[in-house]
Length: 309
Image (cartoon, rainbow, N blue to C red; front, top):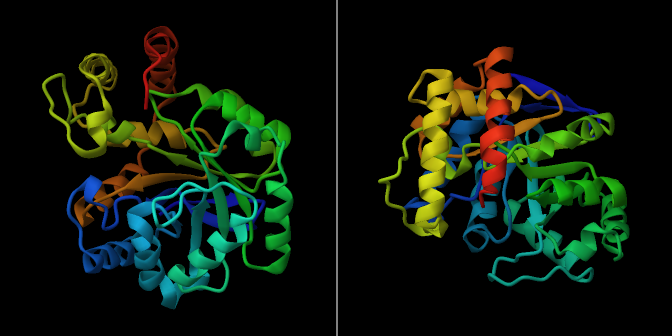
């Protein structure tokens, strides 16, 4: 597993990160608590040292699984959790709730510190720096309960707000072949030594190449309208024509890792096979020619569609 250096933390992070959203989560199919622990441990044994979770994932079960699976190797891993949506399914971004949420995460994760805690898609006024959230995170960081803090966001506009108003250690952002606009500010992220984690790298499965215009979706993927499905299917066909391959995973991950500002690609997996596929994909080096073609496709045909996530 290749690793990338992060100046803010003085650590090396695996290019593939483990996404904890799917652990014991009914929205992503069935997975037991024990199966989750087995999967997390397998990821660690295969070289992954970045684990992403949140209190709101499976009502706290994701944090519990990761904590149990990694408690014996705690010093060897980087755990990133979130703030804003709690284990009861409630949303609370108040400054007063930050330390309480962190204390609860510490308990579920069975650890005395968390490497980073990030705001989980916070309201705009927080990103604009109009609140005291950063001061509170800095206070808790000085206490030693967390080693860093940051944000999980979705858009270029939000990234611009964060870089203008915050001094974060971690940025987690939606970025993939279908959603490329954040790259316009990647140089600024790199200059600051920020850990840049990429979420939704496979566009919720579309960039595996397995979906088409006739695919049927359930769970969280049922969010797409038929119009969006048709547009995505059209783009996937064009990507396949560019790379001359039906299986797109290695190209999707390779595209993201071709940007040196990126630290890690957070992949959500449901079994060992998917885990191994993603790890193997990280070894693939995308050619400059293919990268240019995929960037051209985005600028000319994908960007004008303004696809929702």
